[in-house]
Amino acid sequence: MATPDTRTQLLDAAGHLFAENGYRGTSVRAITTLAGANLAAVGYHFGSKAELMAAVVRRAIEPITAAQCAGLDALLARTPDPAVGDLVEAFAGPLFDEMPAGDEGGTRTSRLIMTILSDPADEARSWTGPAEDSVRERYFAAFARVLPGLSQEELAFRMRGILAVTAVDRLQLDQRPSPGCTPPEAGETARRWAITFLTAALSASPTRM
Image (cartoon, rainbow, N blue to C red; front, side, top):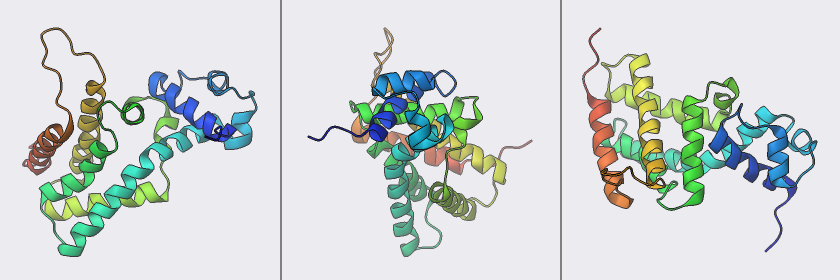
């Protein structure tokens, strides 16, 4: 097996550290030390720590984005207005498929998603490119067509909830349950529960202000 090149080693090290410590809690020195690279390697290969963060997240999210895009294409080929549950499954299903129980890479991806959602650093949310933006906008438009009563702001909130629920569930699979607590379900059972729950959450009546 070929030894990973320096760029790949930096991505692997940064992915581990960003997932564990967040953006501001991870130094360039820590990344290069873990990668076995010199301190200038981040600047040479990525330009900056922020660009390295973007590359790490895109690499982790790319398979999910591709599957989401394919799922939406398949739905829209059948009907311009898919059922909410079908849209939720096409959007959330790849998150479960790419973050399976007991998989180290899947755990790291779920931690990265939680970092994106919760890290106060702007750099943690400035990673998206045209491909990611396009998929998000297409799903937003599809949900908006079948849920016309929701404001754009509330729909965006509910879609963020899909990411949060899925990432938290995947993380818990790799953590020891607290005494007296039922451990989370793995596999297809958890996937179906999540899709049922998230479909109900997306379909709920608009919040009265």
